[in-house]
Length: 271
Ligand code: GLP
Image 1 (cartoon, rainbow, N blue to C red):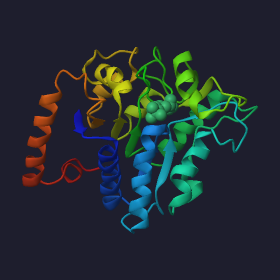
Image 2: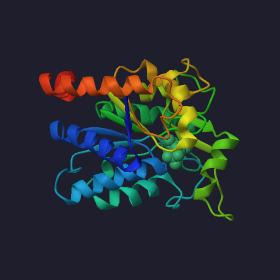
Image 3: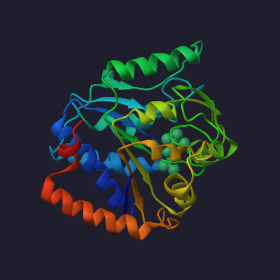
């Protein structure tokens, strides 16, 4: 695992956008796995800014979002489709037909929606880079504590704490779903590379459990310990409970020196 600790959320966004840009430079038709949530907004803003400066293009990019609420009316501003339109897709040259969500409309069988989503990811060649956030309870996507670590895209019931955390995005009279479709942990682990962003003190315990805790269904993000190319990008506050914080910083300085000598890790490890 690569654990990058940066000063603040803006620096984390720069690292994140940099990773996407490096990938698109060598693979303009990359398949990106995307996340929603406040933490990812700064990364998308930085990507939009690089697009406006002609540094990157999404013209041939294909995307798969991690999750989508079940039960919202189509076009609802709280849907993750609307979130992505607002934060990224409306501002770049992406073809909207290339953007995918595990959307389960009224009358759809969630099992079929899940297996079709998995098939679409495979048809696209698999996810090259999966962006992730983390919930306070350690969830990634909407894989709540206790989810199988071998799970695939399916419908999940959200925990009370997740519903509470996300209630800030709904006004009092809005219907707030407690069901969502989400990629599973096995789906996420198949991405060729994962980058998880966490900022703020409120994420510190989940980050500690994910990186240094036991591999456990209690903290779903701990499954990333099994991934060969998982990166965590943390600000100081989110990294504050890590026992090996100093070691990660030292190891990263060593890695940078190695990359200067032997080339960048994308060149070394390929896609
Ligand atoms: C939601 C999403 C997750 C995201 C989490 C954290 O629950 N389903 O994918 O990681 O929110 O969001 P935030 O960045 O707003 O803390």
